[in-house]
Length: 56
Image (cartoon, rainbow, N blue to C red; front, side, top):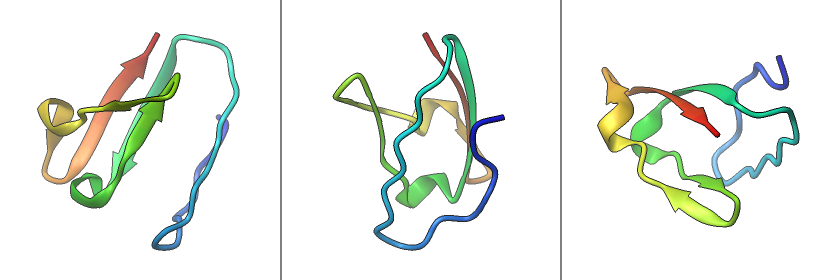
């Protein structure tokens, strides 16, 4: 596990780990995810404001 905590509004976190990386994000409606410099649309992977995705 690389990170397990709540982030503050506006806080940015950079993670470096082995791929594939399984990610679970709470409060997904207001979270932006970037992978390799590109914004990832997490809306299709979100249910009940929790996004679950795999970054490869």
